[in-house]
Amino acid sequence: MSKKLGYLTALLGLSLLTSARADADAAEPVATSGAATATSSAAARRVTAPPSFDPRVMELAAAPRADRIEADIRTLVGFGTRHTMSETASDTQGIGAAVRWMKAEFEKISAECGGCLEVYEQRTLVKAGSERIDRDTEVVNVYAVLRGTVRPNDYVIMSGDIDSRVTDVMNSTSVSPGANDNASGLAGTIEAARVLSRYKFANSIVLAGLSGEEQNLYGGEFLAAKAKAEGWNVIGVLNNDMIGNIEGVNGVVNNRSFRIFSEPYFQGADEKTLQQRRYYGGEVDGPSRQLARYVYRTTQTYLPQLDPMMVYRLDRFGRGGHHTPFNNAGFPAVRLMETNENYNRQHQDIRTENGVQYGDVIEGVNFDYAARLTGANVAALASLGWAPAAPTDVALGGGVQPAAKLRWKPGSSRNLLGHKIYYRLTTEPQWTHSVWVPAGTNEYTMTGLVVDNYYFGVAAVSRDGNESLVQFPSSVFRD
Image 1 (cartoon, rainbow, N blue to C red):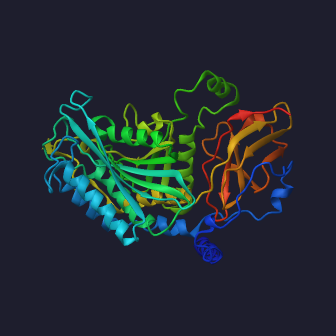
Image 2 (cartoon, rainbow, N blue to C red):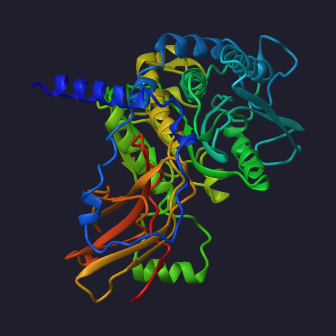
Image 3 (cartoon, one colour):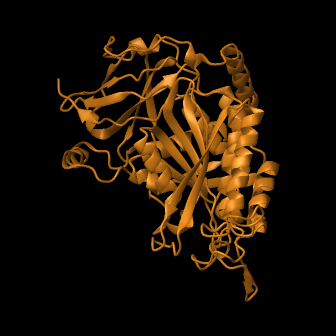
């Protein structure tokens, strides 16, 4: 049997298995902690392992359409400039028109799905004299919430930027198409709303257009502050900033790869946390890094034609993006973007010099590529949207013993099938091995595995095969 035929056969089989449960996460019994423990893999082997992928996610990952993304980018480019301090009264020019158009698009999508989206505007006044703001300016975010049916206060967020700029960051009047930076990310966010609105999810999914990015990351700062003040449990943020360029300034052309930037761990840790990290590890295993690995894995599973590249940096060298304010607020957040940037098309006045064309014009956007990267976002959003609650209080033991030991508390989830214990050598960038542990077992001993040589983490797994983010141990124990 060919690899492709075998893959399709597996997909069909999983489709038949899952077709009878439209919303399994709302029907299964709630898992509780304090259940039985196991000291070998024997108990785990008696329980069928979860599906390796969810056919619904496969369908959604392939659903974004290049023609709709192109139409949205052309509309955004048509506003002339979307500079944060540009025209707000016109219906055809400036950021005000762009904001109103985006809100109308979300409302249209919601009408087509029976009101499934809650559409909001967030308006915040930034006073003159603030960084890169020379007049009182209202920064406006527009976002839509696809409310979770089981854990409505658990949020997965995808964002793109509304605003644009030219060479002078304070120039709010010159034509600034911002076709790739960042109409591409914004159009991808709108397209994700279209395809995700076909389903209901256990966790809430937010699709957000953020303003003020080029001025000082204001939009992200304001939405992150709102999430923190209102007690949102933010599972992860996928910031999309430039997802349409395939031709690098270095001459490389690549329409398959994209980058995932992530910080290693949260900043501002207390002394106890710093000492624990020093002695027990975790320098590259913060929540944002786990989110990056998750996007990497779901992309490889559902979009094998793409080649994700994890970059162990908060952002590009010396630069920033709208995921950073979420990191600063203590939320897992990553940046997704093209691999090969073209600086002639970024932050440039439209012109030709010495035969070189400058400016972020629509001719520099590859719409098929933008659709594929949107699909990568959708795969991660849907997987996390259907994922069970992550385990908590993961603890690692086994020091000076010929066995690694883990304990955890399962999250409250109606669709929990079990957990995966992931592990890897300390020098490996990705989780390389896993052990399946069925629900009801909250402690596990890996006999023969010396804890010194590996990093460990635990993820919850649903009956559909969707997983939570891996939780790195937050404490240690000794028997």
